[in-house]
Every structure is written in C-alpha cells, then in structure tokens.
Image 1 (cartoon, rainbow, N blue to C red):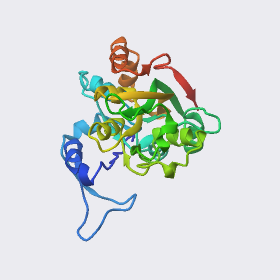
Image 2 (image 1 turned 45 degrees about the horizontal axis):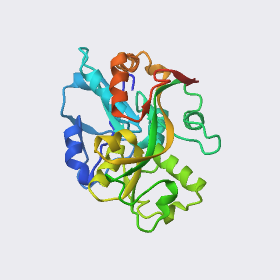
Image 3 (image 1 turned 90 degrees about the vertical axis):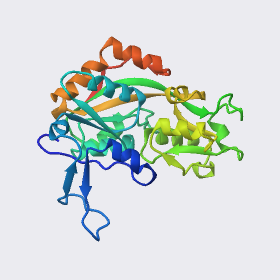
Image 4 (image 1 turned 135 degrees about the vertical axis):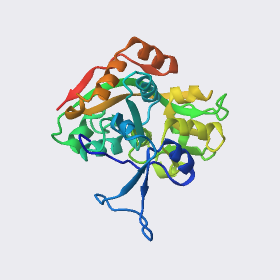
Length: 288
C-alpha cells in the first residue's frame, strides 16, 4: 500500500485453474521449499503490465455480489482503474487492513453481545487506525434451498434435523459468525449440524453446492439464491459495510468507487439483484 506493492495469494488445490486465470503474477518458491515466511523477499513474475498493478484497488474481506457490480462499473470507466477482490471473510479483511495490505475491506460482522455490526470488531482489531466505515447495503440472509424447498425448511431450527446436510462458510466469514449466533440462540450445538465443517468462501459457492446437490441447504444472501434459481427462506437482515483507512480515501480508484456507490445507476443495478435495502448506501456509519 502507498508506495509498496502487496501480493495476496489466491485459492489453490481444486481452484488452481480459476486462480491462475485471476492472477496478476506468479510468485517463485525456491526449490525444496514448501513456502515462504511472512516478510521474506520473493521474486514475482508479472502476468499483466506493471501499470495495471499500479491502477488496482485491492479489496480484501467478505464477498458480496454488489461488490462485483462495483468492480465491473469501475472497470468501464476511462481512467483504467480496476478492483482486485480477495474473499477471505470479514475478519480476514480487517486483519489485512491492520497489516496495511488492502485499500479497503468489505465486512458484515455481528457482535453477539451488543448485536451491533462491524464497529466492535473494528475497535478491537484496528485500534486507533484512522478510518471511515461506509455502508454498501443491508441484505437479506437466509437458508438457500433447492427449487420448491423439497425438505420443507422454515427456520434455523431445521438445521438440527438428521436428514439434512449443509454447506458452510469459512471461519472468520461474517455469514459464519451470524450462523453461529443464530444456532446458539436456537439452542443448537454447531457441531451437531451435519456439514457444518464443510466450507466454501463465497455466497455463490454456497448456492452452487445446493444447486449441484452437494448440500441440502446453506446460509447465504437472497441474491445468490435468485441468481441460481433456488428457493430462499429469510432468517435475518445484516449490514454490509466498507472499511476504508483514511490514508486511502484520496486514492483516485477508491474515490471513484465511492462515486459509483452514490450513483443512481449502481443503486438500480443492486436492487435488481434482489434482497438488498439501500437506505444507508454511501452513508458514513462510523469513523475513528
């Protein structure tokens, strides 16, 4: 960040091919080494022109389909800025900001004690880092199920049924935090839910697992269910915000992103996805 370049690893294993398509460069790991320690020097072979790297806004944190729209809108602008979005969950996004490894982070972390979104985590993880918390949207979260809801799911309590297998989000994801909160409130031990340990990193991956028959249900946003023509049982509304360190507010790419958020065309496109409330979109929710 600033004058420094930051490299964020993409998914490996079964996702290696798609990760290679998304990659801007290849990090060279020395022979006989399994990896590199944090802070170590490394050689990187760029797959894109250096100018593209310099005009990239790095967004690390929670996945949201509205954020994908935002990236598409930025890419269509003539100035040549683009978004590189890395989905490591809300907690991972805040930690990346704490280490100076992102321009902004998407987050929707519910604090179980105060039932307040994002601010308690920002205070704990980011301390006195000067920043602004800007709302992107409120969104409906619920049970994503196959068309027709063949197993008749109606609430979080149904996840305890022995005839269901769910797909979950990764640890540190805001959706995982919300699920744990809802399970505790319903008196359900998370470990008793079949499939609780099966993890994916985005809402669309949850929907894809349900669509493909790999799971009976997953917790996700309505827009993901709608995109794959699946049924949806709403259970909560959550607040999705963008955490932007003050030092990056004047970055031209970040400024353009915030301009797009305030535009009528962007709002119209997000509402068309389904399940979004834009009452506070673009509003500053907190600063420190």
